Length: 441
Image (cartoon, rainbow, N blue to C red; front, side, top):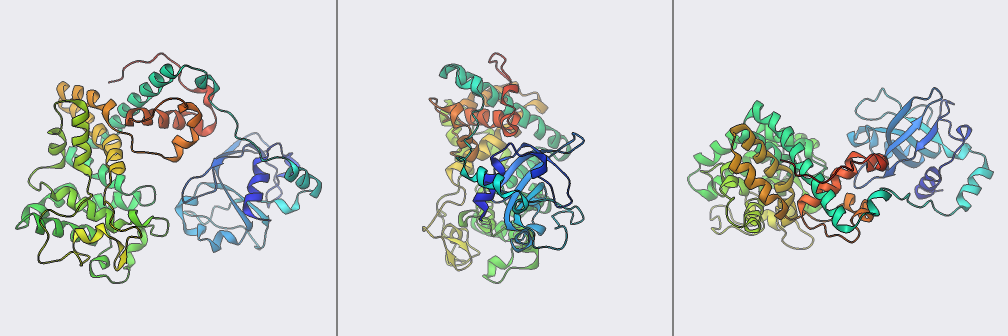
């Protein structure tokens, strides 16, 4: 027995309640077995189980051959597994319930499949692998131009919704800090968003700008801010090529690709903020508007790209030192070169993601707060020209919706994501909005 076979059994569906008893002997019905997880974390997401009294449990599913694999794989301390409701195993080799993060006192439901009647198991394994259920059939039947208009409208709505969320932060901490925190969050990716959010609080925009202003020149400003960011994030050891410090435990390094290591993201953030140290990032974005929409979209993207060495090499600290930003273009960690050579600290794809998910929503909230109709109009005009960040697992899952149409803009990609988040992630595709396309904003 192995985990893929366990997953196949679980996903085959139609189990009688007598076959899905947890370790305590309670019967559950599998209403929805869950959808495939992507990246680090549980194997399945969004499963729905029904108790005997008809109440529902919603959460994630993890497969293991033995129950003890949960601890062996470190899931008990990993907050990504905090929503797991079903631990599906072949054999239970533990004397009692297992713990999960963040509350070890909350036990998991354990389903031991080796106790199911062999005839049922063999019958299930003899069946072909369950196909993916067709979803959003009503949308797939629509002509391509109608699907395009529908997804673009959802993309407009998603931009407006993000702007409203940022607007609440705007009133609490100001526009510059809201933008700063949003950029930090976006540079954390899925693995390190929490520590990047904390870093934005430890090193707020006003402190970062004071460090930049106090430096004698641009190169010293860049280096000073990078060192301050590393120290605030508990990564000061990286500057000396030493061993990890205790504070580094907040960062998820095991699941991060070499290119996404936090040291590289902090190096990119330092260079991004130090490029024009006497002008706030917010003002730099606002001055990027004007002229033809596609050119303005490229200027916005260029604000966030950090993909080449400094025009003015640092003399006092050379590129062979972890204190240099240029060092991190070619390294994933101290004394650990990037596997494929030099790589952007903030590449085109991540820059476009920051524009779509942070810059434009924050600017739209700023325009609303200031009553700046001209800025709001400029944002809506540029929105269709912002490039899509690139392939992701949601686009892959929604490929039947996008068949025959081009998802080359962030607007349309955000529309696909909005459709998935609203209904398809829980297989409620027939509840998707179907009203006529209209302009939002």
